Image (cartoon, rainbow, N blue to C red; front, side):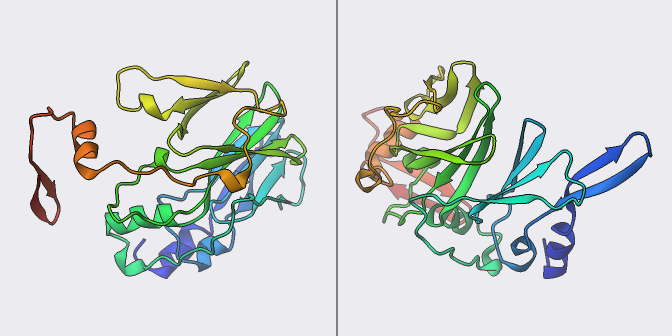
Length: 258
């Protein structure tokens, strides 16, 4: 988007369109939140999420403490709004500096420092809705954060959008971006298997109370302690233990690290 008018035009579009087969007519249903047209946000990293459960369309916006629900028989086209706010939701959104919209490193940092709601998952086996919340964190001196290095929570709702519980996951254990829902439960990708040839998923039945992942929020560390840079590079690049230096090539040049 090159201008404010482009942003206004794009996010004035409908989120959903209904087609009446008998009449041969279209009806626009549900609009983006007005903040998508008025605020500076990193829309590419923070897209709106949509999922369906029991003939309901459920929408989640990354920066908004509400869920929007469009029901099949809603004649006026306006979605119902249900409150949603994670216990760990504490940070005010940092405005996006639009002049740095093409700066990948800046956008990456922006993603980590802001609280946001990420995935929206529906579980048809249990008729539940899972809203993933990721708290913002302070950037470490050596900026090497990855998604799986940060803690997250899953807010569990029933089909009437009533909050059942919030489940907290330690940093560095699971990657919430990779999941699937099975008859046994929600399957989350283990962070320890992101680099290898085999992917391992653990199963959580979030319809049950007292899940092992539930812990006291005050004891939740929001991010893992990062290893020394040399160890990180050896592990992530698969370097031999005998290597004593590496060239880092980026868009702004090269540098040697020993």
